[in-house]
Image 1 (tube, rainbow, N blue to C red):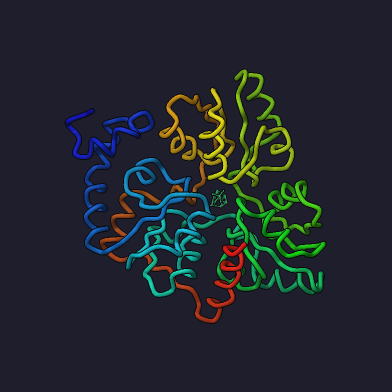
Image 2 (spheres, rainbow, N blue to C red):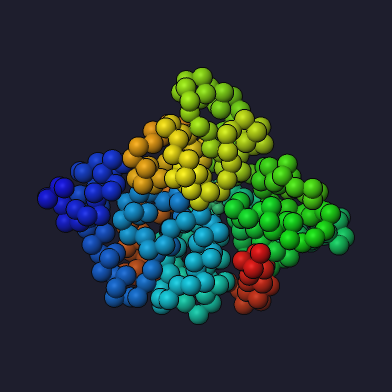
Length: 323
Ligand code: 13P
Ligand code: SF4
């Protein structure tokens, strides 16, 4: 154990993914964040795509979008800091309207959330009368309010099938809808939104990985194009991919998703070799230890939801959580 460090126990598990000199630069912020959490009765919820010093250093609750929404309901704190993107902070606020929800950078958006508006949904409802609208949680609260029920990549098929109808509008991720459509008899009408991180992976990448890394198991997020998912060995949400590595213990694995995911999962599985072609999410990467510290010190940036939409938006999320 490195005795020059102030937090050697925190550093020990991440030493293979964070060089010691880098960690030393983080320690001031970690020290301040741990103190501020106690002083403000705050918790930090961090998505699986947050960098390891956040994910393993200061977060209280970590997970995929579904887990963060589920666990947000159970939080007993005055302040929630969402280390993730804006739609995740909005979802936490919908489920905790009386708590202060902070996001360290208001610019942490999402290409999927930006791809659709409530007006688009109104037009789709006119074009497909009576067809229920399932929206991915990667949407604004206003879009959630205009939909019937939400889903995540971890529960999309179950949500679609829970409605008991032959046809569903599944918005806004075209690839998620097409990937789920392969697993269900429900007809899914898609929108043209894409995740700017996952749309970059190609089936050719999968073939090259297999040729270069014998025996590699290839796991793809369902926001990847359908031909990528078809050629991969397994597909699932970030939490499902992480569980797969824990249960199957592949000798060599590649996670076709955001870059920090492999670092975070590798910490818990030192025997697994992670091959790391990956794409960075510029929105997730706006969050840092220093702006988490500033968020707690200066109570910024507070996430609010328009009172006119809070009830219908919360209903769509709660219907999903009940499935
Ligand atoms: P999940 O963690 O729910 O799989 O979502 C991935 C993602 O891209 C979140 O923005
Ligand atoms: Fe949005 Fe994709 Fe970034 Fe997730 S990884 S926040 S879906 S752009």
